[in-house]
Image 1 (cartoon, rainbow, N blue to C red):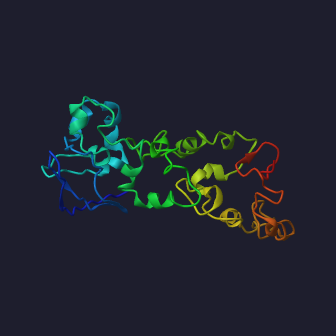
Image 2: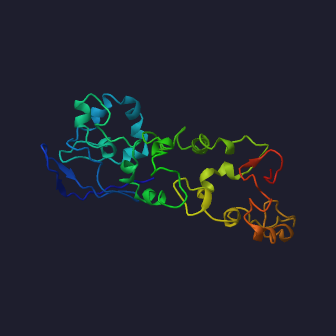
Image 3: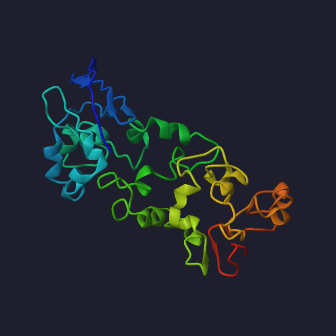
Length: 264
């Protein structure tokens, strides 16, 4: 993925014992716009090199992560990559790393929403993970300090599914008859950040299944086992009774141990 940044700066003055300039950053990274770094009252930027002294576990592989592409700098030209998400670190350093002196995205998604504005909107949809309610945090699913920010081993599909099935264990299997969609990944059917559809599905009713199961017959003329439109005797009337996974049909959409048509 290619990342580009551009800067628009305007100085905001904060009152108090310590007055410091915070640059309002119109930083464009692909399709992400960062409004401003999170604010820690009374704190100033110390630079990412200071963070490395204590947080080697997080910073040791950070250079290879997608978030490292966002290289913000303060007015003095100091690289503040860590502080672009955690806020100014001067009070945190002075307090010897005490809690409450730095922004912790695990406690609040607001730090993430500074760039991921679209995700704030998705979490406000009718069916979402309860991130805004504080019951789930962004870092439960994302390792923001490594690789593509997906927990697991890099960008591997298996790591994405493992992230979901860590909580949704009943859907993990293994199943005797696995639904091939699981090989595509959970996000082929679900939007984990939120959806207007039940169960955070990316499409409603049978339209979700028809995204894949609308194949034509084979060259030999035999009906493809995954085809829907070429088996009217089974589907035309049943689809009117409900979705593919209701009406007494494919009730085990993640996989089945008894039936190769994902029936229970």
